[in-house]
Picture 1 (tube, rainbow, N blue to C red):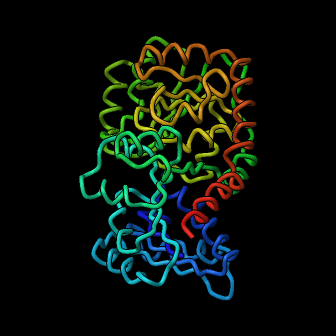
Picture 2: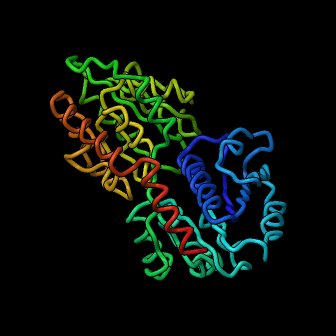
Length: 357
């Protein structure tokens, strides 16, 4: 059984987190079917967390893991060495689709924005040859069909989830927010890349109209100086705090002290950070774009707005109401445990593996 991944260990972000769950479920499936799991990761460094592989379920044969440190030629060569040796092959990103062609039967996973625009012709054709194309949201599945031309019968939903470690960190960090305070503390957690419109600028633009709001931003990237300049130009820099990249424990402490998780992103295929907020009983504010509205249910677990600063402002203004925050936060935590924990992920993943094997 072969997993071909873009990244797995030593990198932050939703895709590596998803891939760690995928590896775990693949190892469990391999044990149940008498196979051996082999994992190849393109961008991982060779010294990345070997303990993760040791923690995977295994029979007498330990799963293998090979990190290629960005070496695309070496990565492709390593993949092709498995031709004729594996009956079950899953590629963890649509850009890797051509590597599946020599195997004849393979699966591919789409994460969201990777399929919102047409792939280069050959890559798109290779994606269409996949026996199964899995997507992390219904929106992603629709884009696979409508934009990439994948046959609907080859598509399958594969939900995202929080692992037990994240749930435990949330449980160890009970809320420290003063829910009766007149001041509202907002939090965003995201990469700050100019090419990824995550809506941080929309929140900052709303702040001059919201004098009782403070805003913390967790994450790093090349967009940070521009966002800091915007905050200064609008006269709200004293209320916008860029915390940089935090450890997992510090990130959960930031979630515990906020009132609301805001990420009105126009670039979200799913949004694992919404699940992290829901674990803390925090309501979420998201934009009505991509897969986010499938995670944050409008008026149920949070508010879903248009991706404009005026709409974001109006949504934030409503969330000054502690009773509304409590209702949304409790519903979010219930929804998380019902639909987005590892057992749900594993059921979907096993269905994918079974279709391929």
